[in-house]
Length: 139
Image 1 (cartoon, one colour):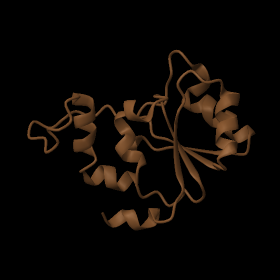
Image 2 (spheres, rainbow, N blue to C red; image 1 turned 45 degrees about the vertical axis):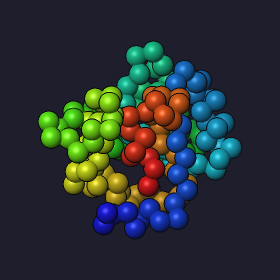
Image 3 (tube, rainbow, N blue to C red; image 1 turned 180 degrees about the vertical axis):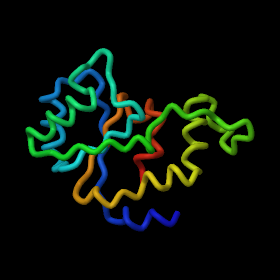
Image 4 (cartoon, rainbow, N blue to C red; image 1 turned 90 degrees about the vertical axis):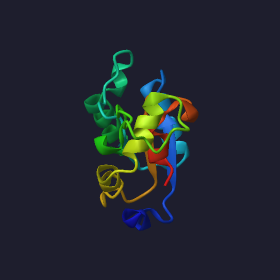
């Protein structure tokens, strides 16, 4: 993968917002020295947790001197190809995202040079294995 070299040596943490309070999320990010939060949700919305709406989350993080970057190219809501090379994924959403990870668009989304420093990625799921985008957050 041509863009992968820029990720060499990067410390990357993942966290799902789940139903956490914003202060709890900030505490966890601080405990691990995260300075940039990359939101990889395609649509940074939360019906049940308004503190994690993209604009609200960005403002909250900025108040705590943390940088917020929305990277929708790494997000989900992808459909599996009819000729999917990923038949091992029985869940259609996971298979669709695995297919998407093989595209130039996905690779381009991995290469933003603006993400210097320890990063954290935020998604909806609090359990890593429940996240269809987990492949996007393991360089």
